[in-house]
Image 1 (cartoon, rainbow, N blue to C red):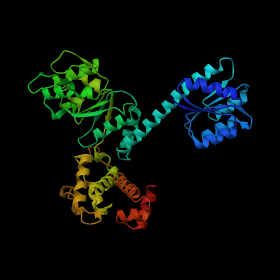
Image 2: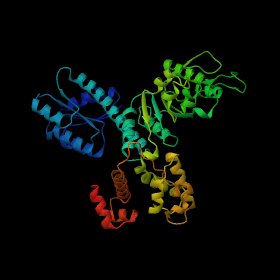
Image 3: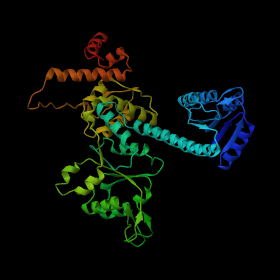
Image 4: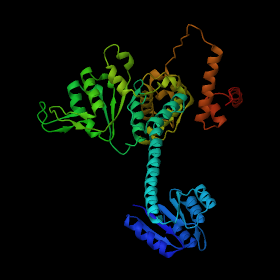
Length: 448
């Protein structure tokens, strides 16, 4: 169960606690003084330390302080035969898990407290694991723009829940990455993550893929086969492009979500499932509901928490970071000595509107790394439609404040150059093809 160190000046107390706690399945070591406790703590790591406050050569508070400084994950239970409000308050302020008096039922109270400490430690470890998984998942969602920060915050908030989530956004915006980040940060992170593109299967085949089938259910069904709902049991099922699902399949999916039971094709028997559902689409489901293309009841069932991913053109300040990430990725996999993107090529990347979003940018960088003969990406290795792109300008009916609009573009370029140059202003000025003096003027103008 747990590794314990018991520190008490009375040998009889040590022996009694060792017997009781070993019966509970714990590994127990005992010492009778502060110096002996310090030596044990230097040579080993304990899950729980039980220490008397009064020791022959010091105080149990010194044991507590050493544990907090060296092994903050270890829980410390203070025990004493001499009640003192001051010592209790000090012990708890120093981080003691519990403070127990040596009364008539002291041993039973300590046994229960140790059980609670074991549960508390397991819970803390689980929480730390979830946080690590969350950071790991969020690391794949690249971008420091306000839109992406909002998405990351929402993912961090909803991931630990079991709520059904609808992820929307244009093709190539990274909907599956968000789904995987949610799964990685959830309590199901160590369970299966199963993904399927609903638009890749005709209706009859999609039904058997999701729900499974029994032998002889249809021509070619030579054996029983589990569906993806069963494979994802206790984990997460991600239904990509759910808008492509037929109305008949929508009815069957709704029933599964309501009853948490799946019925394999060819049988009347039902199988209980425990699955968290994540869905994604690049279509406007709210618009498809009144058109009769998507069931309203299913829409509200799957969109308990909606997450909308912005297109790349609406977070163009993230393009340099994404481009350098993909450059590093492909230079490593292709073993190419390319580590930079020259200023002209970066301007082309930032100017293009990326209708294919992040996926298109990734493909462009893969192509550039494969074709580039120099040690930095040049505009010549980017796709022609990227380098020749001329942004379309449209003026809204109410007009536009040109000076303010141009100022915002200038501010964005100065900020991006600073980020890419790691804060070194001379390098940032070089990226923008301007003198250091001019760059300093603009940086001061926009308070960067």
